[in-house]
Image 1: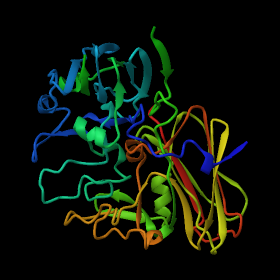
Image 2: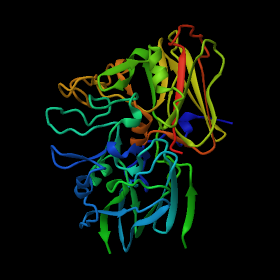
Image 3: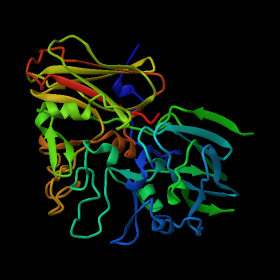
Image 4: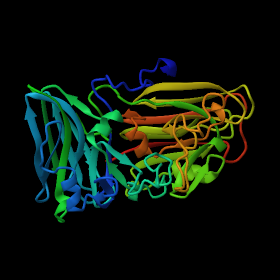
Length: 215
Length: 213
């Protein structure tokens, strides 16, 4: 059977009105995952400031981040478990594991759970879902004005693929990019790791979401 | 009651059928580029374009898998045929020889075949998946901002077939929601049914897919 592409339902533009937006699952070395803190500050996820910047364990009215610290091999932790409100899940950041270890991410929205399994193929890496922009560094100067674009100077392209930096974007930016998983009443995210790293901040994990409505 | 939808395939599976899209682009090989570092790029007229984007890289160093080969006949030819789980992110077909030639790319996802079929001007490739076309998509210095839709270097509709485009890495494609998920099998075939292209590199086609497991 052959289906001509013009009739192919796979070929369609994603809609911001769709129930599910894009929610990519990627892997990145812990030292290459960054966040910005103001116009001139950047922190890698090996740094305490990364987790402070991203409001680790803080909870705001409209955008929230919650986290957990993994303790040992084969650890499983519930990162967030909320009900009675709606919102959009924008980020999941796993703890670091070494090559050939597994990260299992279970996302349960409104009672329906999906289990994502990532067997990381690069050492000292995290599995990240949602708003993490691959192939980019973060600008610390407004003189370099085009480095947020794929193909720009700070995009390393294919060759240094595994070591390429990735930027954790703001939840509002994730929605602008069409990234996020909406939920209407409840959200629960559980992460399992078969071998979390020993370094303190490498064992941190985090979920970020936007609170749309409290009931 | 909790309904468990187990999906261990992942890189990218989602609850609904697909939030992904898969654009098609027609370009001369010299107009489709990829970056090989901060300061270097290569276009599809060069063999290193294919050995970079579509190499069968060890999964231990890269999280994508590629395949490419030269196609010097007008026969339907298999570029990739795997039993795996992943997301197809890019396919680049061979260049046509003459205006009016036709080209086809078949992608078979878990046993269901889809066909892209285009009439081509001379020297055009069919390119599926992760590309970006917005003026000057490749920068190898940090001097000034030159890209972006509507920017002074965006050639717009008038010269759209001459606009330079960027082949995205698989991770960048996934970030933008570009790709086709497959659960068990993927097969990619290409054909220039009108005129065979016997020129080295111009007759090369490739495909790659992302995986995390």
